Amino acid sequence: MSRRRQQVFLCLLLGSLLIVLLRIAWPFGSSLVLAVLLATVLGPANYRLIRILRRRGLASLLTTLATVIVMEVIFGFVCYRVVKDAMKIQHTLNQRSVEEGGWGAMVAHFNRSDRGRAGNTVACFQRNSAGQTSMRG
Image (cartoon, rainbow, N blue to C red; front, side, top):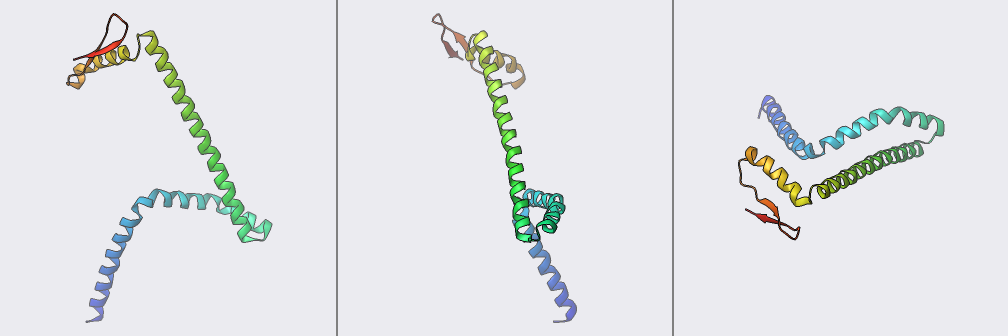
């Protein structure tokens, strides 16, 4: 085999291995981008701590712990707000549904307004003499 053929074979082999590597790493792409971003942003703080403490391992540990704590606080706050807003929405929907005659009446109202747009048959709700909602359709 000539040297040129060996180089072409090596390039083809490396190209195919690169494709396989990218297919394996693709699900972790967002995590890798986040890791690069955090390393870029927190690198100067870590170097400053290394100079102050004169211990690389301790500085890295403190930087990592501070990052985890800050991210946990942010994530916790976001989760708290989402749950609080979801509870507020659920309470508002319950209040409106009680004022309008219950969940069945509210669903029937939405189904009637969607019937023309959706083009499919949607079951209608009706209230009987006892005040219970039943389905007809």
